[in-house]
Amino acid sequence: MPPQIGFRTTGSSGPLPLEFTQGGKLIPMTIAASITVNSAETFVSCARMGLGIIQVLRYHVEKDLKDGKLVELLTAFPPDPSPVSVLYPRNRQLSPRVGAFIDWLKYLFRQEGMN
Image 1 (cartoon, rainbow, N blue to C red):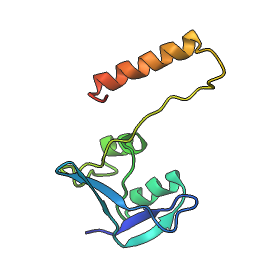
Image 2: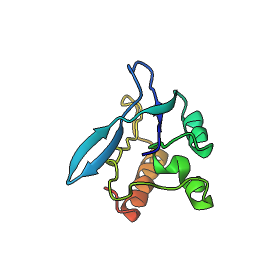
Image 3: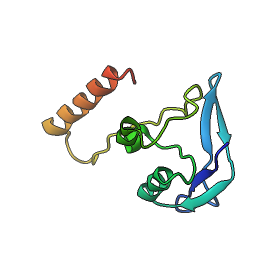
């Protein structure tokens, strides 16, 4: 297996593991990292330079996948979907604009088969 490009978040003791789903069960996996970074842009740039494999949300690399700069691996073992939240101050009434935006997001996610 190629080396992993490690991603460290603030306060973490080490690189985050890769996560896969098999049979409905989440399987975290840590493999040797060739380099560890703490910036999303650097993370993707390292993968573009061929320094190792990464696991990111698709929107970070969609264009790279389409352009052939990056190749998707292990498609039979996808990670769990990431939740999406819309936050707004609770002490304010939900404006029609924000309500329309939330409805539009719901529509987009339904179109993509996400709930």
